[in-house]
Image (cartoon, rainbow, N blue to C red; front, side):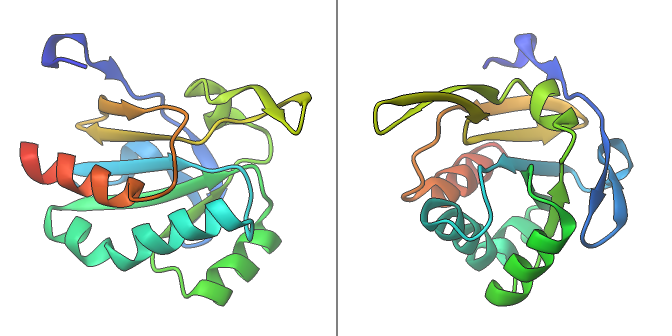
Length: 154
């Protein structure tokens, strides 16, 4: 996405672990990583979350907040966060507000079955604008790729 086609990042106010309610536009950091993942405590989502968690200090050095978003409820997020000592905020988008606003809800295929679900995607925001999107993310090295891109523009 080039600089002149940046889209305004849809704002949302949704329950979260660290702030009770997270309002996107009130986060003051220069950059924000929003990564949407299908489900707490599943292999791919756990790996992706642990990768972002292990790189968090490097994101913070670049004045970047990392926020994980799924449709899991707060209870599920609490267990997931405690189990893996997650140091960033998890948002419980049970009503699919942010998920639909960022167009990451869609048709998925698994074992020959089609169903509606969350499509793993990540967005990098600056000044409440989307400056980079990763759609249908493959988990392996994804957090490193996001960090590498962020370092290349900062």
